[in-house]
Image (tube, rainbow, N blue to C red; front, side):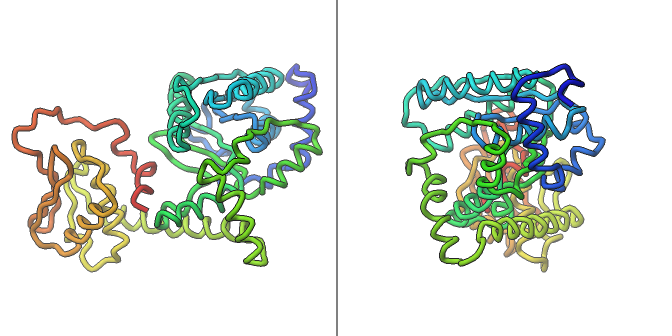
Length: 367
C-alpha cells in the first residue's frame, strides 16, 4: 500500500501497523457512515487537527491508512499556542515532519498573544479561530478531531458542574454540524490508554504536553483527580458508562430538536416566535424554540442564564410582557407572539454580529 502511492519511510509503515491494530470497524459508526456519504463536505478536502499528542497522532495515521483514496485531499492543521517556549516549537517541528513523511500538506498557525496567563477558554478560542481560517482557505468543510472516550467523561463532568442539559451533556458528538462545516470525532469509542498502547506497538512516538500534568486548568484537574476517584467509587468502567450516556443524550436531544422542527414555531426569517403553538407542550420544546429565536436576532446581546430563565418564564406564562435584550432592543410578547423591538433612536445598522445564528454551536451555552 505504501509503494502504491510512492511513499517510503517509517511513518507510512507505522500508519499501516496502527491500522492493523485499530481496524476501521472500531471507529465510530456515525463517522464511517458520514465518510461513505456523498455530501459536498465528505467529497471535498479533509482537515485534521494535529497537536502532536497521542490522540491526534493516532487520528492522523488512521485516516491516512484507512482512507487511502482521500490522501490527496487530506491537510494537516497545527496551532502553536506559544505558551511552552521551546517545547511548543518542538511540537510544531514534529507535526511538520510527520505530515511531510506522509506526503501531506500542513498549515501552521501561531498565537500572537504572549505570556503564560492565558485561560483554557482563550487558548481554545484562538485555536478554533485558526482552524476556521484554514478551512476557508483550503475550501474544506470537514475538520477531524482526536477526542476519545476519556474526553467524553471529562467533558460530561465539567458540564455537569455548570448545570448543562441534554445538548451540553451530549458533547462531544461524533458528527457535529457547525455553521456550514462538520466536526468529526471517530475515536470516541476508544480509550486514551488503548490508543497509546496501539501507538507504542506500532512504534509511533508522540509529543507530550507537560501542562497536561499540572492542575492549572479545570479539565486537567478533572482528568487527574476526579475521573480516577469516580471510577474507583463506581467499581466499574464509569468512563464507558459516560460514553454510553452521551450517546443516549444525543438521541434524546436530536428527538426534541426534530419535534421543534415539526411544530415550526418560528416565523418568517425567524423574526417572531409563536408561543401559542407551543402551549401545553413540554417545557423543553419551548426552551429550544426560544434559544433558536434568540440566536436569530441580529441586535440581541448575549443574555445571562438568569435572564434567559426569566424570559422563558415570561413566554411560558403567555401574558403581555417586555424584557431587555441589551442596549439595542427588547423582547416583546403580545398576543402570544414574541418579537424583537429595537430601541427607539438606535442608529446601529441591522446586521448579525459574528457567530449569530450558529444554533448548534451556541445553544449549549444555556445547557
